[in-house]
Image (cartoon, rainbow, N blue to C red; front, top):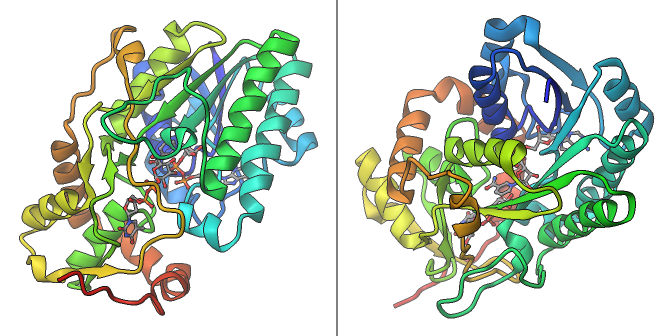
Length: 344
Ligand code: NAD
Ligand code: DAU
């Protein structure tokens, strides 16, 4: 692994992964391939560009554009593709699934074709615990569980996983897949619940908790996720899928209490509002297969939430322009007409 292509590298997890690998591998060269949608931001990589200039290269492009993908892979002498590029927000997928099908399914197919045609390149797909769907009772999802996605976002990600495995079986493409739980940390677009609630709280705006707030999520720190992805890339078995998370989930209300406490803001900011359509109540991953590779998360979910709250408190320069831009319109569309619930 000498020249890697990181698609979606200007987004939240991608930019953290680029930092992680450049710091960790002194000889590695990284090409980021990103369309720069609303979620992809060059400022996420500005410090990387300054510090690692010679080993870092940026290409603006769409993963659905086969010619541009193949040209980049050939010109940059790529030996490994790591596919982070995706439309990622469930609420946006409910409003308009179109871009999700295009980028998450067709875009993955384009990348797989490029990997197959240009030398059977190593391919790693960044997937999500959402492909397993709602997990009932005390069960935890295992990698071999059937896929049961329930939102347009998770259906698109599941479609991509099936394509990745099909390319391994049919063409012998050396693939791995990782399925991560909810990531939080620096540079996450403030539409996702944790940065949304932190930035709302910092502006003393109410926090819109969907339904009763008793949905369960495993909030993992993004740096832990990146370390696990790297381990799977270097030590994972070809053809295999790996779950990544802390293995410990909490309710959304518990998450809110922690972040309000860290920011010293009052619980009176909490508002229960109309639920998300088709909302998955619980995700829960069995992560023993990834632990067996020799990885362990450094952060508990609570530590991850507190560290994330401090980062947003200290980095208003990053999120304030976002909240003052396109985000305003989006916020109005999703939350403007949302009915408040009286749960007494
Ligand atoms: P993000 O929305 O922050 O970033 C997505 C990036 O992909 C952006 O830089 C965007 O510009 C780029 N992109 C979108 N469409 C593109 C296209 N057609 N061509 C090229 N680039 C395109 O997402 P994220 O939270 O960093 O998620 C990254 C990956 O991790 C996704 O595949 C997502 O499904 C997966 N994932 C996310 C989480 C999470 O909690 N955020 C958890 C598990 C898995
Ligand atoms: O589980 C991994 C997935 O986590 C990733 O694959 C997705 O890309 C990522 O967006 C995330 O999906 P979720 O739907 O779990 O994340 P989100 O931050 O949107 O919501 C987390 C929980 O918080 C969920 O139960 C819905 C709830 N929520 C969300 C928002 C935006 C609220 O209560 N209020 C909100 O305003």
